[in-house]
Image 1: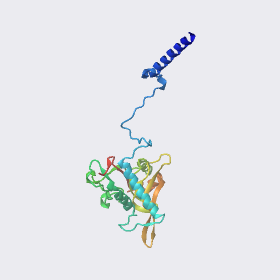
Image 2 (image 1 turned 90 degrees about the horizontal axis):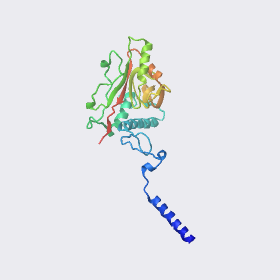
Image 3 (image 1 turned 90 degrees about the vertical axis):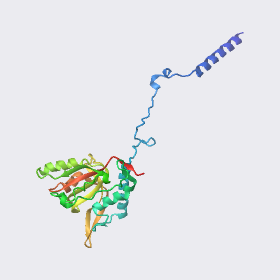
Image 4 (image 1 turned 30 degrees about the vertical axis):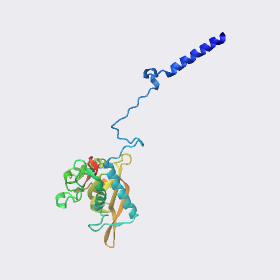
Length: 265
């Protein structure tokens, strides 16, 4: 008799356990501290696999320009390159234009997708007056293919003191961003007059510097011809740049690619 009672109790316990385990768990039955809500941001600009920010077409264009500049820098292998004749690609502006033209075919502007991109020439000397030639480019409309906008500009103001002009020039240089085309006229280490460069980094407030990609800022003459040095990832204190162009009748301009750069179809 006792064995039958024990058997009956065991069967009852097993039935109850089966019922409990098969009963659906409701959200309100889970302790609040172990519940976790996961939401997905459909407008996120990050790459899920790496957590890094996605590269835009504009970013890719800048990276293509810098990558080609690195190739030419490595090809030069520290040797000076001829920068004497009008067609020499190692003349400062020729160098930056060459990098642009060799990489532009992959890109367009969203507003003018059928227009091939073009980079303006320097403003002619007569139109630069009373300033010296080389501080800016011709004003070409975006509808004609110019994907650059003036991000900032500095022109020496003769009505201000030297110190006041330097302060303005510092404010100008602090606006530099990666991919900016820099155009100036001044008196620099390797020459005097117009010079072009491409900034490879945003202005760094910790080092008070920017990094550049350029050719022919430093140069020398060989057999009567001008030869220029190719520079890549050249870090220079902004006060050194300011010393180049913060002079009477001189100035500089930062040109920046528009935000609507897209991949060409």
